[in-house]
Image (cartoon, rainbow, N blue to C red; front, top):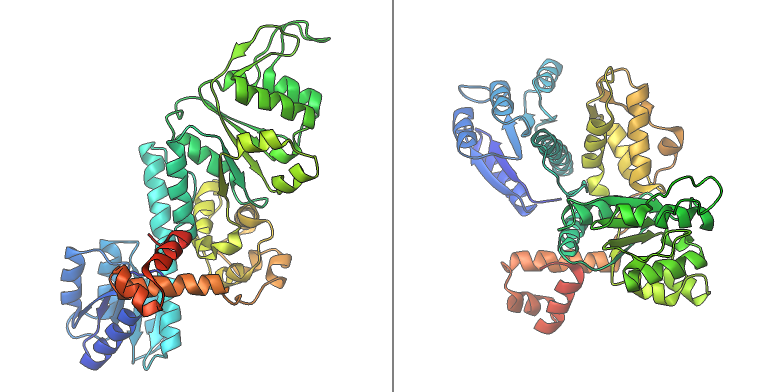
Length: 443
């Protein structure tokens, strides 16, 4: 669970101290108050990701606290805790905007689960608001949605590569958003004011690809009544994205290699060398090295394209981004008359356990389907495709690598970033720790 800021409002000292202890041990930053009035003053001074408040408080009660907290800062999630549980109280709390309702004495696992779910919902809401602001202000931003450590590192790498002028090869499964990564590189680069042109190498024959890429002169072939620029010429000064580069025919690989080497090309039917200044970003879901070994891809072109390799991770490697992605797709695809604005927890739980063989693209299709079929304001589990509901996986056991990474991160946090102390705790030398920090991106 990502560390968060949590405000606890509880008049019973022992309960307040217990909550603070549990949440602090989970890595969160916790402030604790004994009354709603104190809690509201704290909210005036600082924003919190989550408020956990008792329902029965002296003076102002928890319902009023809930209303004012949500009015002050709508993205803040609120969990209501009480020993005076009634259906009426529970319904009222939920109607006023509470994320969930826990009855005293609460179970530790239940508390942790509700906190985790509330923080996931907060992250989703915050990301949607951020995207809305960017749209309202007309600002461009890297078109990659996600807050997981995997995606934060991906965005960091994209920003670094954007400032370089080298060719980039993006590898990843189908549906992982390789074109969005390419667009991100272009949008943040000095070439962003020029054209970004994308071409799918698997959709054209060699003859059509020739015309699309290089254009043609007048009367170059039957029906060519006038000359026409190709993608390379149109994109001069900008970026050309070659999707599924492994599908590019061998004879076209020779021509592309020449463009990369000479920075010039000939139109179909032409004799005049046309200079071109482009950055090439290519993507594939194939192993190009194996294709090189089999003679299906030119080795010299591979090395020209593979100056820097970037991995677009499958959705199963950053499941924690699923709630944020759902919120993004609901905003992106909602049409007039479509009312779904959020997702039910049981539907989200199913999606969190689904293997997503089609990755982010499949999730986007699922959300579009729900918007088209749904009648209410909530994406309920009955709107999920049957194959999704029936094809879930158990939470996978972590790999040894993931366990080591998590443990190193925990030790670094416990030692306040002191690498000498962390290395001593881990029982390794400082150089080995430094290598692992670099390997796992824990700088």
